[in-house]
Length: 282
Image 1 (tube, rainbow, N blue to C red):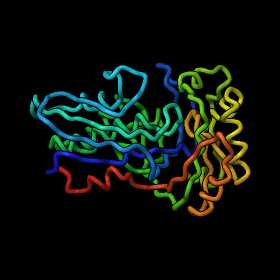
Image 2: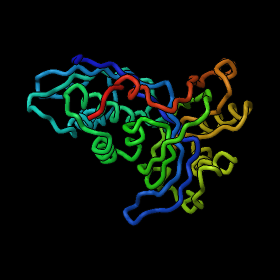
Image 3: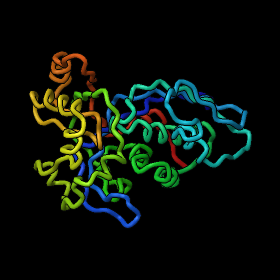
Image 4: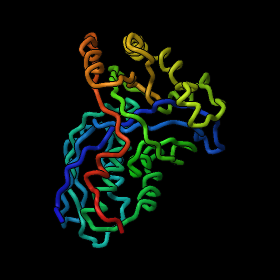
């Protein structure tokens, strides 16, 4: 088995986001549809016998021990005390953009080191480790576009038809805690069935507030609305519109006014991480 792995850690979109209630512990109950993309960060894992986890290329303003990649690696049980890894990260997913970058990186780390360290953990234990790291981590460990409920951890895999997305990344960071604690956030949307989403009965409950608080997001949505329905992903800041093919999505990207930035990505039903690690499971 190779001692090194290089993997695409994919971004995700929330194709809709309904907040259906609030639990006693403060967490919000929600419904969403996670769409995986063929675009994201690149993580390279090299196993070693140092017994330590080292990280390069991740220039975030948080202590190393709080980084989700490091926390994920340290959450895994090790067969031998000297099992370690060096992880190099090429970041593309913007922080605070609602694209799930930290959660995806954590899940990719769990999956990669499970293989490199030959731990043999099955899907369920990996997903259980993931949910302790963050509500969005399980969709990436499960590795499939999915309908989600609960706090985002109750997943039903969904196969969606191929679409292309233009994602615009406004130059601002949005705190999930800020939006979820906002006094005017809708928290009592009635739950829907999957069929209702396909019939067009959905929205992002955070979008109205984010548009009011962040002019950059409002401007990005106004641009995308020239091409069809535009939505916020998660609590933002990124927004997106869908297109039937790559050519139309790239044509819209070419009209993006400065200083807006964006990218085109293809929708995936299966995570590229699972595809790369495909093989017999214990």
